[in-house]
Image 1 (spheres, helix red, strand yellow):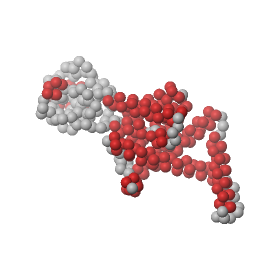
Image 2 (cartoon, rainbow, N blue to C red):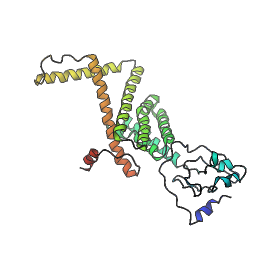
Image 3 (cartoon, rainbow, N blue to C red):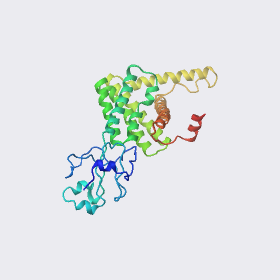
Image 4 (cartoon, rainbow, N blue to C red):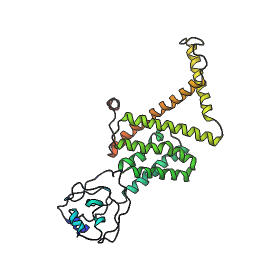
Length: 310
């Protein structure tokens, strides 16, 4: 017979709950299990499992209400008769686990709305690049605090909320690349990837988002915005060559008029370089912010720490 929650709370010999800041990625936190014979309500799906069947399972920080302890071993759980599969937590006589409260859902909704609010404020009252650095951080924080499912939920909810407030076009510009970037950064930071890996992969994703933005705007406007951008870059290069020629740094006509292929390659390089620089600033902001929130992320390289300390 499982002990009641009041008995578990009044027993001073029980182990204290351990605060785990995240849920495993391969376990869903809200799939309902079947109700047991002795319980009147169904329990939430397992999120953490016991490493030892003879010990009491550790509680998660999001478990607001205590659940009955599990049977000490598989033989006793099979002796209970009906409902033994549910009480044993799965096949093969595995130890059952316990559910979590509504904290993951509340944090996911709060951080998704925070990401949407930053995009909304930046749309009408742009304060420069300050808010743009923070765009992917709420969704990455959801991943670090909980799991990949919560991060995708936050990205989806923020996109739907912006669709209602601003329309589908501007919401797509947030989802691609910033919402996807938040999921990617959370995944890499959870797995302790180095800054070089996360900055390069994130920079490629942001650059791809820039090309996607140009393509979608060109499709909606009916104009070739990429060709317009190439023309602007051509004028910039012609101005730079003219200045270098006037200063005597290069000979007259040594470079000539930049070709279309050269300008296109220069445009792509500039976009990728700007994306990598943006990801570096995002990592700096995340490292300073998450450290104060008590959330772990990979340590920056040594030269970055030296620069910050100085």
